[in-house]
Image (cartoon, rainbow, N blue to C red):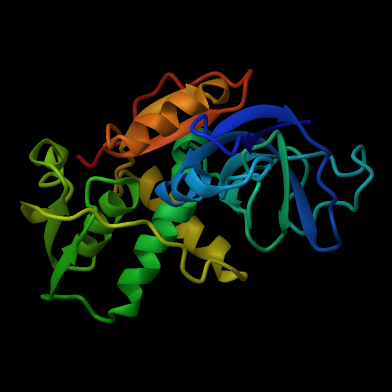
Length: 266
């Protein structure tokens, strides 16, 4: 199969042939259609050795496990089911094997592009805010608010009834944040996306919650770019140069972009 792999130099990634993933008991194989690009992956790629496989977020369909020589899919994750989730790494590939408890079903009305943006950025924002406890009436400072995770954090904090101050690196990056719920937008230092406690059955529950908010128009998905994964280098260079305000998505070759626009809060 094909996958994006680190080049170990300024090119960052290249499309190469790699072995098919092995699927252990309790895992599910997913045919990947779209992946999200996170700043954390970019940081790793700038120092990674050649051959390292990046990728956390994915969206696609459950593969036919029997044809692949692996065990049948667990529970509700039958072949052909549209799913999205987070992998331990290597999701920038045509197929990825993940624990069956992690993926969530993509609800009707959500494209794979939208779904792919949610796992790392959405879960990090949601779980970081939960750690703070009851936010009703509290003042919340969201650094790196122009990025994918920051934009989710602004909206979720406002949903939890906090007063949100959004911090961006440049004035122009603050565009649209007031509409997402920021009471104030200030220019300061950028934050860095982090992955925090994303394992376990609750991952699918939290992803289902986030996806439902997007499907009902209560959570906006700001997608700054949707490109074929053959253009991954250009996308990563734009992210490195901070020319991406929102999320960047890569489509596996052959997957057509959705005709519908990203969903906004009315």
